[in-house]
Structures are given as C-alpha cells and as structure tokens.
Image (tube, rainbow, N blue to C red; front, side, top):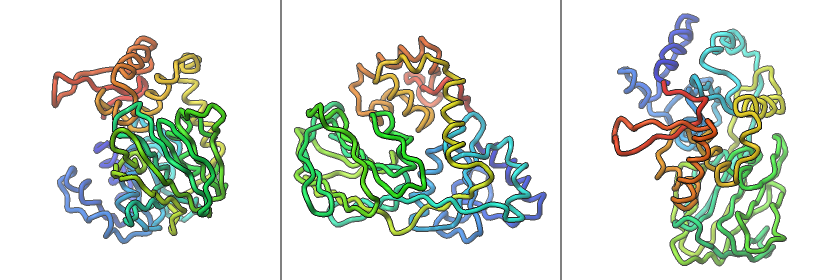
Length: 339
C-alpha cells in the first residue's frame, strides 16, 4: 500500500498538483504530514481498502470534503472504482473537474448520551461473547415495533447493505435510496424478517439484556459498551461525499459481484453460512488472524476453524505465518496479495 501511495504522489506531483500528506502516511513515507482532521483541500485521496476508508471517515467526522478511494493492488471493492494501476488515467478528469458528487447518507449512534462520528455502513449490536442471545425491543419514532431475542441486530445504510448485513440475509439497497435497513441476526422468531424504513426514522433499541455484556460495533471499526440501552440511531446531519466518475453505482455493484463470481466460480454458492460469513469478513476487513475473525464474525472459535478449513480446502482463502508472531496464522482471500 505504501508503494502505491508513493507512486500516486509521484503522478500528482508530475501534474503540478499541490499535495498535503496525512500525518500517519507521512510517518510511513518519512515525510511531514498533517493530522487528517486538519486537512484543508479540495479533494482527499484515500489509498487502501475498505478498512482504510472507514477509519479515515471516522477520523474526518463531519467533514464533507469529496473523497476519492483508490484501491491498493489486489484490494478492489465496491466504492473503489479507481485502482492504483489505473489512477493515472483519471488525473485529467480530476484536474478538469470532470466528475460529480456521489453523496452517501450516514448514521449517528447515541449511547448513554454520547454520539458517535457519522457511520458510512452500519452499527451492529451483539453480546460480547459470540453466539449469545440478546433480548431487546425495537422502537420506531418512539413507538414499539417489535420485541425480540436474537444473536444480534444490524442497522445499515444503503452503502452498508452490501457489507456485513448482506452476509446475514439483509437486502441489497442501491443508493440514492433514502432508507435504512434493520436486520435481526438469527432471531428466535422464525417469522422475523429484515425491515426497511425511511432514513428520517428515529430508531431506538431499548430494554437490552443478555447473560454477558452487550456491545455496539460501529462500522466494524469501533466498539462501545452498551449497558441496557437505549441505543439511539438516526441519520447523521452530514453525508459522506465521494468523487463520482463515469461509471454508475449500479454498474459498480454488478462489477463487484461479477468479480467475485469470476474469482471463485460456483464454489462460494455452495458454502455453509458460517464459511460465507468468514469469507465476507475477510473481503471486508482484509487479512486477519483467527482470533480477529472470531471477534469480527461473533462466531464460536470452533465454527471459525471449521469454516476456515473449508475455505482453504476450496482454495478461496490462503494462510501464512505472521511475521510478528510465528505462532499465529494470517488468513486472507486467495485472490489478494500482500504489498
């Protein structure tokens, strides 16, 4: 990723574009950088993967500076229309402003009176120990809609509908639909189905209880302890703004699905649900240890081990030894590579 960042900087400098470097990136490049929240620019280029993008957005908070995500080699994804290898081709479009704004609605989550930064994808509410039931009541605009027990609950934006929520049976929602989805995970009520509501709806999760502590997982990056609730979820005041080039968002989605089919063929279609979820998390988060997969999927460790054994056997996931700790294995999608 650093090599790709260095090459992109070279291309921009050769086009006489003034650059600012984010502080942590600057440290990796041994250059002076600026804290991301203090960047004052016409456009921010984020090089990396989904995880890089989500972390950057959390740090940027309410900023509406347009973002251009550029996928590092081997890490294509839904919002990453531009890759490091094709970046040079779009520089003239950036300079001549031949692009439009792609605005994505975000979530704001309030727990114990403290609000989160705007979230691009989703908030998940789960017991800290995997496969542990939580009980709760769902309120919409201050009226109780249902009372339920499940392994968890996910509230997602249209952008987030193709991420974690899709892995647990949520609907795919294409922007610019102004809706939010509410997805119970393995409800005790077999009739319970995902719910789609207007994005101006105030969603409140009350009466939360479980045999262990309950956490809210924000965009897959931050965890917040929930002591019985309530958890208030509503549309954030500021949207995320992305650079939109020539491709339509629907075409980008089709391209992503086609790429997965091309890479994995029909094998992924026949996987058990646990293996599909592990595969989706590895695509979403990048390279992870087995412990990290357990934390992200909230599946029992033995289930994760079984899912990984299937994925490795089918050639969908590869494993290598961690250079930091030789006792640990690192798992990644087989079509990715380390930079």
